[in-house]
Length: 102
Image (tube, rainbow, N blue to C red; front, side):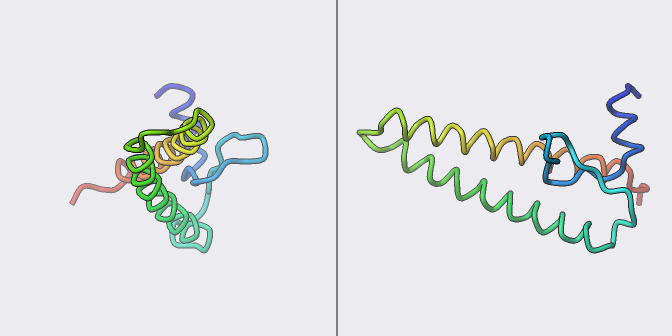
């Protein structure tokens, strides 16, 4: 286990938001508490927003005339959404790996 992986395992659950400095936030607590449920709800919202953004991107990219400002805005939102999705996947992947086998 490298330093980053070990730090994540010790720190607890990766939350779907970042700290004021842009760094990751972790929950060290029982997985059934309020913050864990809130994190689950926010992850679901982030995934739903990514789905809606992909639909918007599909529509925008079929338009004949799209400005560079519109494309930059779309790229920024897609980047944010991808970053959120990656964080959700990492958090859920760690939790799945920690489950005991059936």
